[in-house]
Length: 472
Ligand code: HEM
Image (tube, rainbow, N blue to C red; front, side, top):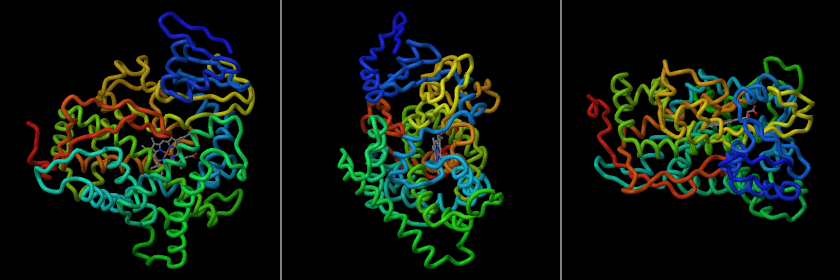
């Protein structure tokens, strides 16, 4: 591996076969990517354990990989097999025609129109979980572990919208522990030199099997109950499981036009796990930022007030420009999915001016793209105005919280609606503050981007009527 340290940047030590570099990336993926960018410029070409790995830091090159040249790249088989070992074969872990078919069948269930139909379920979940977790009386306050709160609310939302299942605090805690055990184990396995066979007693196997069983049992009980007793016509069509059971491929060139019961089970696993941890991460950082910048919260209330948003017009929050700008800017500063976007070159291909040989692993470092001063002036500053109508255009593919190209996030509209509803609920009902002297914790990659130490915020219940807090 070649190293070419530049002035003012600490040298990158690759060690024999790139092992020091691998250890550095594993320990601190965000910092390591930053050091690689500093040392090598817009393309960092590495060889680790005989594997060619290229980091692309230029948004135009990233666009070519994910969009323009998408047919020359595939998702990494190794990563897909690791995910498949606990999620089964779903739209995330399948490839080629199998992936196309599943995506075609599922996509209509996540269109903006369809997502609007889930608003009532989302709203009920938000009201119930917030009522249980946060102070109920006006003026009452509590200091809260924000990540636990957002996990509780987003899990309630996903279980309500997937299965119309009302969860409890105890169940949230048990299930989120199981999901995090699985995601941490997969992060660990990604760095192993080989994928262990199922029978081998490898480190973490017992906890992985136990956690996998917790999620499989939850899904099996929901799906079995629904297939045994289909819901009445007026209730049917309201949740995602109803949608999956009824979904048809309009263009069934390959495979069955419907999802098999195994495919329904495996996609429920994916939607469930993809659906709460990322949104929970985004909201955790958003709440931290709102506690840090109370004047932004005042502006949000003013926007809701002037737009006449009331609890009965919740769908209207999805259209509030400033509210959405604060969420987008929070996801720029703290992109929830920083570890997910990698591709393998299927053939020799040229990206920009860089020849990329077949088999190369291309890494899209979302964190660096979002913090690049060439795309975002003063990138470390929280400035929601960047995403307001009329703001200077953001370079294509410089902002990618939901990915880009054919594999872009299937749940983007769902997540955007859910986050706007939760954010609006919090702004309407609570004042937020950090404890004196407290700062936002450092972020760490835990599949989703999480606070390294517990983020605690004081929530004080306020008069729920937004009109009462109109900002003059
Ligand atoms: C803030 C919340 C979310 C973020 C930041 C996020 C981010 C992403 C990203 C970056 C990808 C692309 C990965 C790639 O290109 O390799 C992705 C894919 C995906 N996401 Fe999300 N996601 C979020 C919420 C959700 C939700 C709520 C759901 C479903 C309920 C969901 C379902 C999926 C699925 C099924 C895929 C795979 C799509 C495919 O390969 O065709 N996501 N997500």
